[in-house]
Length: 332
Image (tube, rainbow, N blue to C red; front, top):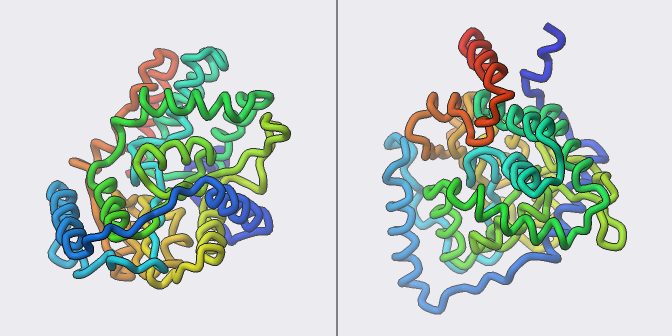
């Protein structure tokens, strides 16, 4: 059973590397963030905000206790901001895997490595959670692939990959929640373990302020194949939000954070308005215990957990996927 240890996610405290990763992410986010302007007609924006939230939440599964709080987000509160996890919160699936598919299409690596990416994405969808060691393995693969390439080259390719694999995977409900914060004149950042360059592209395409993501080391614009600190996961995300809030003069008690994963409890616990979006079982239990608000934009949670991603069309993983489904069912 020891070999299956990676199947069980574990939370860990922040370390020096977590802090370094968070500070690097905050610095990168500030360099690329877009300005957020408060709309001129505040009364009409407040009305628009209400209509947007109502429309976005119509398909969501919620109870009376989960109805949106009145007058939130607060229009014109420039010390408030919103932080959104990316994978399975804003977008279906994991950005790093979709990015890997795009790189394979452009012959950055071989079919065997695509099979590995596809299997990792299939597991991510099957389990419905992020395991730090599993996600680290995926990022190690990505780092080895981009080593020696120019940052500008990967940014250009990333724009194309977003259109090909990510644009149609954005959850409309979560997107509208982010827009409500923007309409109120607040800043909105993605917070993700995906590479900061990929996260920044997604944030720009969605009209968000910017992104906090994993920072890969580069020298003279060329990737070295090493990270600054560690992947922006779990405690590192909280450190990134804390560092950015301090630099931007934000009051975290007035900020909101949104995530699907219990791994992001450290980040969610930092803010005054935590939201569980499409939550995994552990986050759902934690959120209900602390009376956090929940939103579920999936039409069926079981279907979302066992759905096979497009990347899994690679024939080589069919047997492995079936085995994982069987294992998943036995563990239920």
